[in-house]
Image (cartoon, rainbow, N blue to C red; front, side, top):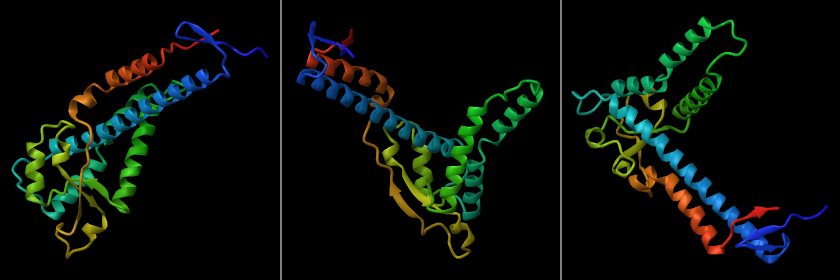
Length: 212
C-alpha cells in the first residue's frame, strides 16, 4: 500500500524519514504531558473536594472533636451520597417504563468512589484531617478552600480499627503532610497551559502535521 505523505512546515516529507519520526516523538511527548497534567488536576480537585466537605461540615462551636464525634463525621462523609442515590432511585421509579434506567454512570461512579473510600478506612486508612487535634481543626477553619493553600493542612491515615480501641484517643494517628507542587493559578488555568504547551512544541519543530 502507498504510504501517506506528511507535510511539515510547508514541505512534504517521507513518513519513514528521520524528520517524520522526530515529529512523531514530539507529538507523543505533548500527549503524555497533557495526560499528566489532566491526572494531576483530577488528583488535586478530588483532594480539594474531600477537604471542602469536612470544612463545610465542621461544627463551628467545636475547637476539636472527641473520638466518638470524629467517628460520626467520618460515617457521614462515607455516606454523603445517600440522599443523591435516593433521588436517583425515585426518579427511576417514576420513569420505570423506560427501558434504560437513568443516571447509570453516575451511580456507578458513586459506587466506585464510596467503595474505595470504605475499603481504605477499613484497611490502610482514609487520608483525612484529624479533627481530634485542635490545631488541625483551626487550620481547616482558616483554609480558604483553594488548592494553593492546601499545603498548609495536615492529613492523617485514619483506620476504623482506631475506633475499636477503647484506649485510643486519636493522638496515635499517623500524620502526613499534603504535598502540593502546583499553585491555584496553575490549576485554574491548566487547560490554557496545555494548549500553550502544544503550540510551543509545534512551533519548535515548525510542524503542522497534515496527512494526505
